[in-house]
Length: 261
Image 1 (cartoon, rainbow, N blue to C red):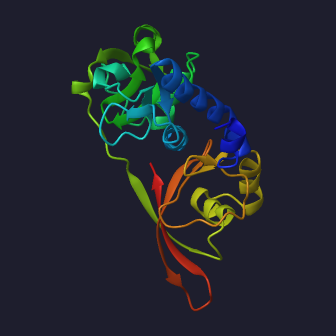
Image 2 (image 1 turned 90 degrees about the horizontal axis):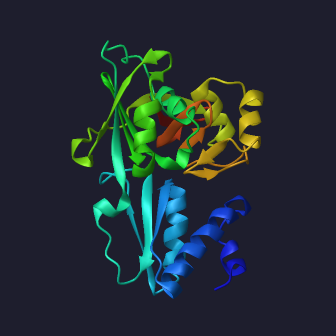
Image 3 (image 1 turned 45 degrees about the horizontal axis):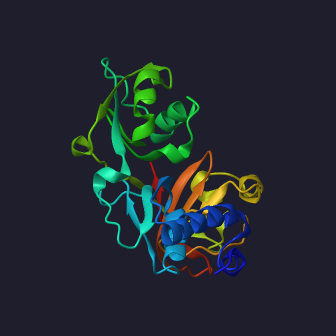
């Protein structure tokens, strides 16, 4: 099947990844190549899996370091290949401070410091932030570089160790519950309430392609959200629509939202 036949299933801005995924699958099926990818977000995993399902001589396996990981590496291989956990080459970067000054740091602080070393987001998996530090899932090939160069997170001096996956300490995402009454379920309206921005200001990042709904770029402010949708606005954070509770006497909609903290 040609790339043109596949394109109509996905957005135009996803075509670059569709091309790469198609090449991995084709090489696995025709030339028996085995490809280990960087970390993929759930949308990319969906695209890759969809393409692999079209080719009976290839298969794809995913692993992000633990069973419920959001970001995962993939192994694209011939259909007879059996992938083991070690094949995904994932390690744990343990970030901590001897002064115990990390309690106020957040996910964005750790991610910003790691990316500030010149690394791509694709090399970083999930991050688990605790009072005493952070466990970061990383690609094995950048482990030594990070251990040597990450010495500060948001102006706080840190120490790093490389740990095996067996030492990983996961943290369940925390959601700050918000009860909102909105005029409609439009993306711009709910987002403006969650992030406490005016409707005019919320339009700027959405139209600039800095908003994702379920890991897919969404530039339409009038996009209607539904229960279970996860919205990420770059620079502001993420939230999940937990429940649409009903209509008020004035015709507004009551919803429950969880803001990731």
